Length: 266
Image (tube, rainbow, N blue to C red; front, side):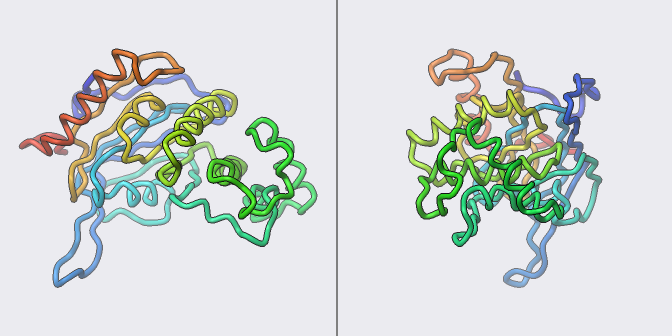
């Protein structure tokens, strides 16, 4: 169901134990000189995600999706507007595992950065390996892991940060279609066990609809929210579900038409 952003009232969603929400009001971000002109990455973005909700963000390349996640995580500051959210952790596009560390030590990095002693950090990380389908690979080095396993280790590292908001930037973009489908199902199951508020950036419209509670569609640069789609179908969802197909077609239609006058404006 399409949602008018300006008309939508503040939501009151049930909080999960880990809490957290994300609220962007009229957010803009402009970069410095580029070919003699300033580059507007985002302009007038309104986004709201309640605690425990998975919000997917889709849009064309260069529309500011990664910038949006970095703003939410506090790695950049907006030029205009306001951002209010619980502490957030970023999982970047590439797993960035350290090749000289074992899988369990890579997963435990967030705990080590938080000054937890190494053995305690390793025990806490290792306790989740079976749950995340990594049992038996605790001592493997990243080159010995498949692409899907590497992404699971990277996600576990993000999860162990303890932050109530997770920002996932194209987490499965480099995987083949079969592995990608497996990882989508795995992520959905993992978040059911370990609830967090999630902002997922993806270029895959179908992936967004399969995983998210709502899908925000950004315009070409400067990125603005053209439309939001609510996904009410219960999980797990199948690509062949009529509702999934209908929402996918709606999202693709919005992306192909581009911003209409006044659409997504503040």
